[in-house]
Amino acid sequence: MERERTAWENALNELVAQAHACERAYGTLIQSDRYPTWQTYFKKRHFEEQDFEKILADEYHSVTQNKVPNSIQTDTPIFESVEKQLLEKNLSDREVNVLLTANEQNLVLHYQNLLAFDSLPKTTSALLQSQAEDLNNNIQSLKMDYNTKYKTGHIKTQ
Image (cartoon, rainbow, N blue to C red; front, top):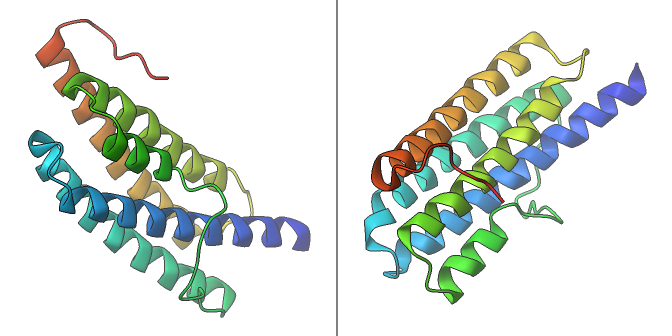
């Protein structure tokens, strides 16, 4: 039981770090003028992840009685490669959509992995479920956008 608690505490800490890295990546993309048609999306996601990070950090503190370190970082930030590709390559809107969709789905997997723990507190579980649903709504919007613009059926993720 104690081992599982440690595992989900570590997974929650990692999710806070992912939210922080995601928020920073979208913040960088807002400052770039490479993809003007995506600026609204980048801003929306930046502020959303900023909120998610604060809420997750508060929840982490609430359930562990420990504060998340100010310099929290993840060894494998999901959106670091997105940021790098968008800043270094000249992608089409279609390619941007596919890239974002795949990485947003990867982020949702982190939520799902954390939600799989049986000993997760109910309030933490409800909070994670809510954020995961918001992310899924973003993914569905990206997919609908893709299908509307390119009329190719289901989006293919990498």
